[in-house]
Image (cartoon, rainbow, N blue to C red; front, side):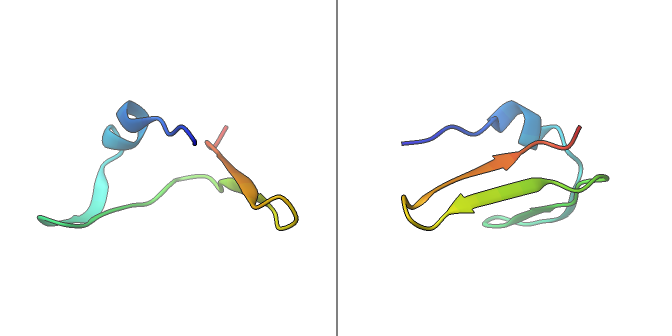
Length: 47
């Protein structure tokens, strides 16, 4: 169960890319929050 914005991620210029790996870098920090009790988390796009 989950969602990620493929279009958003595909529009970021990769730092490195080959057949199996795509490394991207954000200009601003991203916010990652994980709840270890419920095993749920969220990664927020930079503002």
